[in-house]
Amino acid sequence: AQRVTQPEKLLSVFKGAPVELKCNYSYSGSPELFWYVQYSRQRLQLLLRHISRESIKGFTADLNKGETSFHLKKPFAQEEDSAMYYCAPQPPVQGGSEKLVFGKGMKLTVNP
Amino acid sequence: KAGVTQTPRYLIKTRGQQVTLSCSPISGHRSVSWYQQTPGQGLQFLFEYFSETQRNKGNFPGRFSGRQFSNSRSEMNVSTLELGDSALYLCASVALPGTDTQYFGPGTRLTVL
Image (cartoon, rainbow over the protein chains, first blue to last red):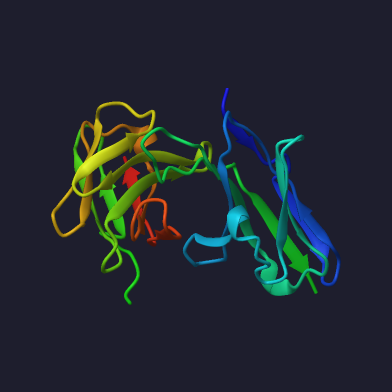
């Protein structure tokens, strides 16, 4: 079955510690891969997408096609990184689609 | 540019009623998608529209329907409401399919009593 898994629901670290938010997916074809973030009382917003290969707010995401993983990493977490993070593959659909399939999300708390 | 707007922001209905939610995309955006967010199921895709045509539909019963108007504004309707329909309903817009980031609205919080 096609699905996306974020194995951890909660992650709590201290400021300056490295963080890794895990995401595994199982889709046929080559889905476009995204990470979305939702800060407290704010809208869901794009953090980064694989195809652009950017580093946003110090976060990077590595695609491992062999393991079908797209883990999000940051070497030194900041308090303002505290938020809900969602991994969201965009499965290829004949004819095209903007449909995103979201993981259940992971709450990151960065303590001072 | 103004962001995606959704109205109303909060709604309380009773079982069996129907409800219509509205989404106004960012000016110039022509594609709108809808999602349902619940604590148990997370974010689930409902449907998407482009140029007034439904392009894709999620796995929801026929009580959930939507449409898009010529100005790209979109509405979704839920008929015969059930308790389980209580959720945050989000819409997202993109300028053209496959070309840009999706921008999400603040959502409409629907409570079914």
